Length: 258
Ligand SMILES: [Mg+2]
Image 1 (tube, rainbow, N blue to C red):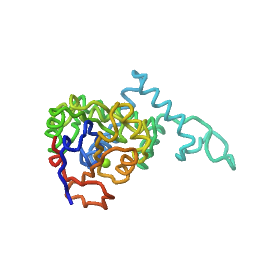
Image 2 (cartoon, rainbow, N blue to C red):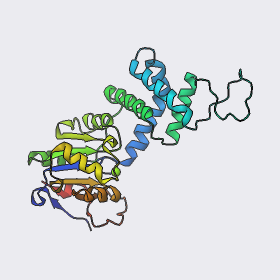
Image 3 (tube, rainbow, N blue to C red):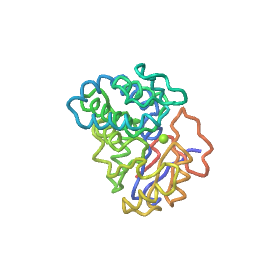
Image 4 (spheres, protein in one colour):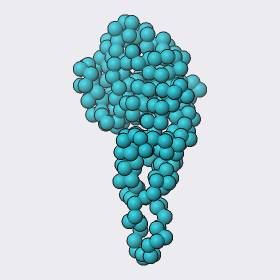
C-alpha cells in the first residue's frame, strides 16, 4: 500500500504541502493552538484594545458581522419589549464581543475577524516562546533533503498565511522558514477546488505536472489532480488509510526521496 517516491525520477520541481495531518499532528491545532487562543482572548482584548489600532479594527469588524451571525444578543432592558423584532438594535457591549468570540470558537465559524484575532494571539505566543510550531520528526530532514537537491517547497493550508509562517518560523525543530518559498491560504480558493491549485502553480510559475501536492485528505488530492498536479496521500500511523482514490500513499516524508 505505502509507496516510496523519488522526486527526481518523478520530475518534481515543487512540493506543495498541506499542514494539518501532513506536516503537523491535527492535535496540535485542536489541542494546543485553539485552546491557547481561547484562554488568552479576553486578556488580549483588554490589554491591546486601548493601544493597538489593529485590535480596534478587529473589534469593529466583529461588531459589524455580529447582527447577521445569529449570536443571541440579550435585549436591552432599557428598551420596551418589542414584539416581532428578533434582534435588538443596540450596539453590542465590549463584554458581549468577548462572549461572541467564544461563541464563534465553539461553532468553529469561519469568521474573518476571528481568524485575524487568533492569528495575533498566536503571534504573541510564538514570539514570547509560549508556543512552538509542531512538525513531525521526519519533516525537517525532508526539507533539507528536497531543497539540497534543488526542489522548492510551499504550503497550502486553511490556516492563515501568518499562522503558517509562525508555525514553521518558530517550530519545535527551529526556524524552517528558509526552506519555504510560498505560502497559500484559502484566499486563493478552497482546498477542494481545482481552480485553487491552478492559481497556485500560476503564482509560483511552475508547471502543474512538475508540482507534487501532499495531503492527508483525498478530496484535496482529487482537486489537485484535476488541475494537473501530481499527488501523494500522506497517512501517518496510527491513522487508518482511507480509500486512496488512486493516489499513491506514504506513511511519512521519509518515503519521499529527493
Ligand atoms: Mg490535512
